[in-house]
Amino acid sequence: NIGKQLTERLNVSGIFTAWDFVTKKTQKQARAIWSVELERTWCELQGVVCYPVITTVPDKKSITTSRSFPQMITDKDSIN
Image (cartoon, rainbow, N blue to C red; front, side, top):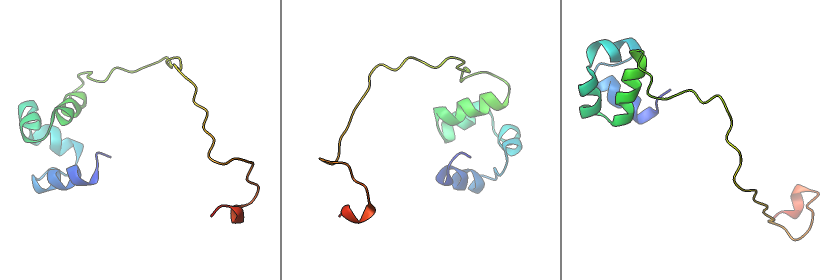
């Protein structure tokens, strides 16, 4: 899914499916009419890798601890 607003804009241009997108528009049109991100999506649909697959999970750089209440909350009614 590419988002409601973008879907509406594409539909106005006669684009309803990914097939419509890659056959009715060129790469330059995708970027000129919409955005760099949509141009990259167009390229990906053509088989050009623009978003590399990340196979490893990066190490966390920090741990955050946050406390919202001064004591343990045991029931919903005590939250006002």
